[in-house]
Picture 1 (cartoon, rainbow, N blue to C red):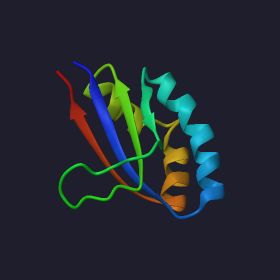
Picture 2 (cartoon, rainbow, N blue to C red):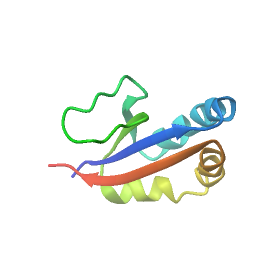
Picture 3 (cartoon, helix red, strand yellow):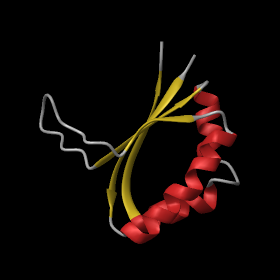
Length: 95
């Protein structure tokens, strides 16, 4: 079953975040993932949620998404994201 990593990112250091984006791509691909949406315009249709930068990743399974998120390759890249942005992230299984 496919799984999706949904991310809302508020970038605080745009220069470092650009470097993060370059490095993150290879780690996602190495774990069978792909970007569905990556920073396009986001519009709230209902409720009061006002997202910042929205990223949506697809992985073949929830386990592969978790393996990516906790991988040795992504760990230093993740630290770069933590240093350059505030992030909310969730894993959602598909149908």
